[in-house]
Length: 404
Image 1 (cartoon, rainbow, N blue to C red):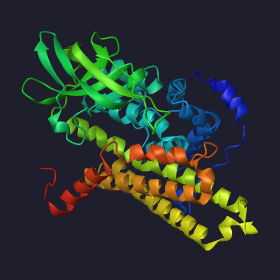
Image 2: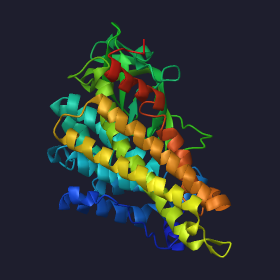
Image 3: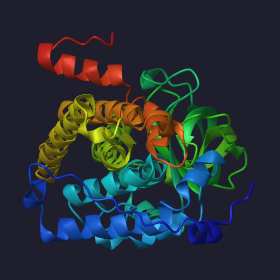
Image 4: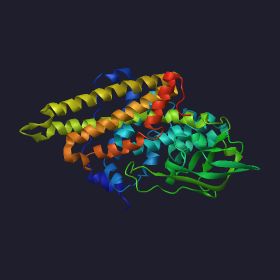
């Protein structure tokens, strides 16, 4: 079914009255620029995403028309220097933008996270000047949509065992392999792909749409991230010019550095999903009457809401602090893992408790809670599973590597 997005916006004209909880006055820790960026993205979400997102989810449709809009509002690579088309902003600004996008939908935030942290960032960090000039401005504007190829059908948490490989062929290399669970893949114009050379060393390659043997089949039958474009990257003797190899990194350091940036964005984004569920639950608890009074007057409902607000507040402080560390260049992978793991977990718990407050209505598409809950089941797995982040922290604590 092809959706008419303008009609949906006209039909679903109820006011999105979301306001974020700020129990510890964390806004006072933000600059005016931070708040301006957050509020501008929030307005865009209210206008462009809120009226259409339920239909997109129900019909498993990615709203492809929003890609250039995300470029226009600066959500593609806001942390990339402006000379390459990015926003030249700090990491708090980036986090707040991701928070607002995921308040709309995790899939929308995923589109921006992949573009900025997993496609633009490695090209900026590890690419040649020619690669930066060729790709980054078009990715920043949304003219190009990018994807990131690391996870494979047989290798998720163990990327070092990847089977994708390339062999020398004069001015080109011949790339073979497949990547799975790839956001943006079905519509991507360019993919940053990680594969092993003939010596078994991992390198990043920029693969362009249209290269012979490169296909991007769509992943179907998802119960989660249904408004996100997910697919595979398949390489069948693809001839990639050697100038498309990222020259300034080799080994797993390349993709893992990118994942740190993406995980950081997720720790903020998950707060947005939690806030939206909490906002919905508070509003419903005040309006829904049972036994002669609003259900928000009952002790068990107040307990749920109080615990939600507490966990959201803790997550806000965690994200803000790791953001300041990112700005100072001091954030460690284990600190980022802690924030990603904690904040996605609390968001999923908030979604589940919010669903309980809404009772049967909690599963209805008239409310965002079940959509957020299903989405977060993916978010808690991708960019490092919940358990993998636990082991990253465990290695930091004990000095012992539990992965081998």
